Amino acid sequence: MATSTRTTIQTHLGAKAEALLGFHSPKISKDRLHLPGPDFIDRVWIGSDRNIRVLTNLRRLFDHGRLGRTGYLSILPVDQGIEHAAGASFAKNPDYFDGENIVKLAIEGGCNAVASTYGVLGAVARKYAHKIPFIVKLNHNELLSYPNKFDQIFFGTVKESYEMGAAAVGATIYFGSEQSDRQIVEVSRAFAHAHELGMGTILWCYLRNNAFKKDKDYHLSADLTGQANHLGVTIEADIIKQKLPENNGGYKALNIGDSSYGKFDERIYSELASDHPIDLCRYQVANGVMGSAGLINSGGASGVNDFEEAVVTAVINKRAGGTGLISGRKAFQRPLQEGIQLLNAIQDVYLSPEVTVA
Image (cartoon, rainbow, N blue to C red):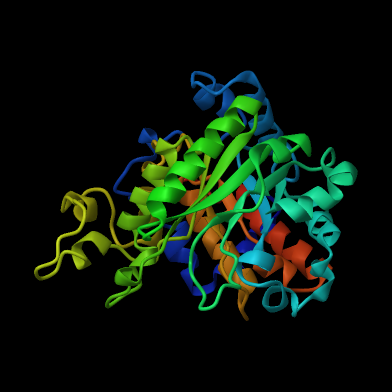
């Protein structure tokens, strides 16, 4: 990697550079992981029950864009028009009310794939499905019911996604919510159908329960998100999307006093993870069958330090043994060229030989 790119990464990391790039003592050794690489499909997935068409479509994802044939993924997800309301999401950049511009950003930004709603991708499928792999997001939180409720409703079908030439389907489960039982069953059936038709599966393994907010927001705890990842792999998600962990000890916090929640072992916090962000993320990776189901962390909301936050997240994910980033709002809520630059900054982390797995 050119010196200028290495310097740019370090500049974006700022005061965090030494702590993130100099970390070399993870609790779970990288030798135990199934790490990303050009041979990932042959090395990890060839012995699975996935049929030839699924393996072919997963290969499509891993072979496309600037990160093609590295084993890493850079995905542009824009389903916020439903998940966060179109006006609120696209007010900063109204061009993205037009779904074609979403696909154009993914292509020009060098992404492996574009993930969006059934309606957005269906409107442009004949023009673009052969130019960049499509990931059809099947379910969403619609945010128009009054009062707002937090649930995931299917908007498209697996068969329709197959007909438009999608390489994979995606779905969200709000683990921990009152609706999670139904969502697990719905998504499990959808993923089984997707595999039958030869498409890959990506699960947004999010937590959602007001009880998870105590002294900290344990929706972002490594132990709870790690368990969500493990449940996602259990319904055969090929790739796991998860928020970057910011703390740990969710199980412990929810078992204070007379409450009883789940099960945990103190070694989670002493032998399997420290409080270092790379260790916390590695625990997420480990819960995905030690990296067999690649972990892609989300980029988060757009703000004043988008480039810095995106690069930090990418460095943590890569050094933890993750598979890449899926970043949307940071890219599309800005002018096109800036969005491309942000996506490229993320990709540069995964292309840099100096940013290694810890």
